[in-house]
Image 1 (cartoon, rainbow, N blue to C red):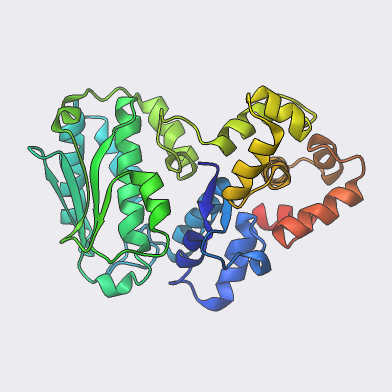
Image 2 (image 1 turned 120 degrees about the vertical axis):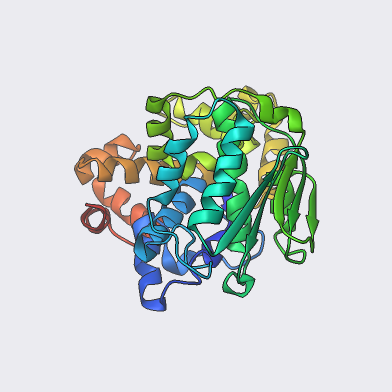
Length: 325
């Protein structure tokens, strides 16, 4: 999934003081005054991942302020490092449940090996009014489980303790079959998956943690969505094709491609702008000059690039580079 519902952008900031929200959005490369309000609006997954991490650092809380007690920033990495000593997925998930229950009073976890069920209960659900943490924990541990064994785990069901939200279709796409108003928040899969061996090395874990949480935005090994397929094609070339050329590469009629993207609230121009923005952000953070970044992302003039970058993020390229350093 190349984009994420804007609901998650808004809800992850609920525990952040209003005066800090704009700064965190700017640092993530999200224009504070252009955060969409429509339920079906979407934001690029990489920018959302930067925002999540920025909020965690700002609050020094892996739970983003949504649990009764904070979980210090860095605990997730500590937990993940300890998973590699287990040989099988079930043992690793049992360790996850024990770790949370023993060290994080705000979140109680349980692993039921006979059912293939990993569940989480928030000790004070009122601290999580938009249910961000309840959903985030399930996303994290489904994706980490898939990554550990190198295969996409098909979920039999995903339970949520809260009532059906406006973004329920997003949750269905992320998890498959969903149920609301359950006793706890849980993912459940065929117990045979628990016998799969852990395949990852220490070096792979280090790379995984360095990319977190961008790497949990999609299910490892799953068929990529249309937008992700388009991004993959565009990354392979310096100059972007026309819509008609792109449609031909995707074996689609141009009008069918246009309509499919429009049905998702997107357009080819949106995708190109998102890709240029993400390329520019990575280049600016690496220390590349504004002039070279402009050329790198396909602008003939640095001035035109600077105008576009400010429209995308709310900051000039030079101001963003200063904030990112």
